[in-house]
Image 1 (cartoon, rainbow, N blue to C red):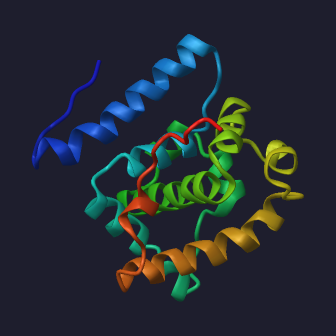
Image 2: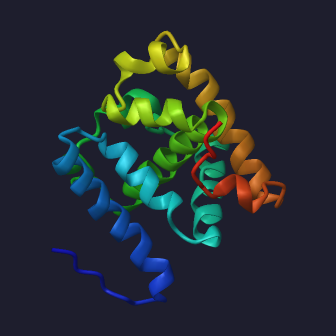
Length: 172
């Protein structure tokens, strides 16, 4: 059952909610477990471009203040129940970071690697095989730098819309 309260425009509310429902259905139909961080990140990336920009630009503040953030290991182990127990500010931060990690994996490492990682549950143990990272600490060096540059570039409008949109790659 999907219940969406349309306080705003449907184009701003429906795609994210529908993404979550579709990913749950994929889990059931294909008998794979999609990491909760991937579900939340993909939902953000299926929002409108202004919403995506706002979410990713919001990472600039915690990064510049060196505030506590989730980073990869904490993203990977977050469950839906744990997420629900966080306050809305931490949920927003989690969603923004999850979207940034999805964007990093998809845009910088390609569709095939992202799909393989998704089908394997998006876990730390698959980082080396899929992306060449030895562990979460190794990934986080790249991830933190990526988030910093992405958020900074979005804030000054240097990031093109097509970078923020996920479209299927054409077969080679």
